[in-house]
Amino acid sequence: MAAEEPQQQKQEPLGSDSEGVNCLAYDEAIMAQQDRIQQEIAVQNPLVSERLELSVLYKEYAEDDNIYQQKIKDLHKKYSYIRKTRPDGNCFYRAFGFSHLEALLDDSKELQRFKAVSAKSKEDLVSQGFTEFTIEDFHNTFMDLIEQVEKQTSVADLLASFNDQSTSDYLVVYLRLLTSGYLQRESKFFEHFIEGGRTVKEFCQQEVEPMCKESDHIHIIALAQALSVSIQVEYMDRGEGGTTNPHVFPEGSEPKVYLLYRPGHYEHVQRVFSFLFSFFFFFFCVVVNGHISLLPFPVIEPSMFY
Image 1 (cartoon, one colour):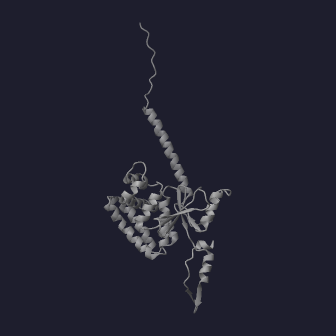
Image 2 (tube, rainbow, N blue to C red):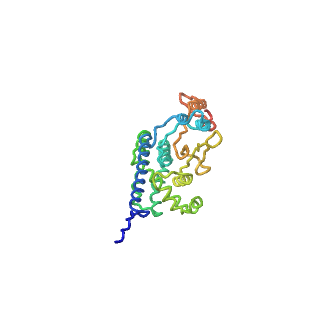
Image 3 (tube, helix red, strand yellow):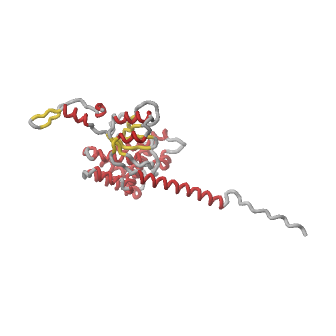
């Protein structure tokens, strides 16, 4: 009787079910960790903060970090306040949205122009092939916020709207759609700036329309042009020199929105008249018959008095 051959243990081929299960478990663990990080960020950071003194930035860097300390000092010559935004990849759109709508509370002429452009924007997107049913709710939320400003809402109530997750996210979605729409309308121009062999449409589908995708120059240019709202971004990084680098989009225009960019993150900064500026303003006034009449005088920038 022939001896039985020893049974060899079966080896599962590569790419087996068990290996797939392990990979799936690993992916789920990564996703769970990312969710925990996002939850921690949400707890620690409002979508848009209260107005803060710009000096809070000094505390975010070591005292001996001369590069950033010097650049914050330079920034302080031009701005007095900052509104922080949640670092969730949507910070550019939220900072832009709140900055401009807050400014419109004191600019009725620009408010009416902006409202008209925004109202027509849905029609423009639909004509490009965006589905009306899909974008309608986002557009309605956008228009509701503009009408809230038109009714002279308080800054506190506007801030509350921006910190309502649903309202704020719908605004971001619509601003992303406007950005995508403009890029695709002007695809002949922007195609030269798209890397990786992608078309402008592919770039928009991958890098513009999805939530939490970070923004760069190309996004800023497109949104500024789509709504005819000029944006000035103060770039602050570890580059040499003790000053921030301002860039205006589009170049040569008069800024209406002012943002601070630190690597990977945008926040809203505000130019506010200082007490010293107010003193000089009064100095150029004369009291006539119990009333204050303003005499002509050269335009003076607040930064001249810091």
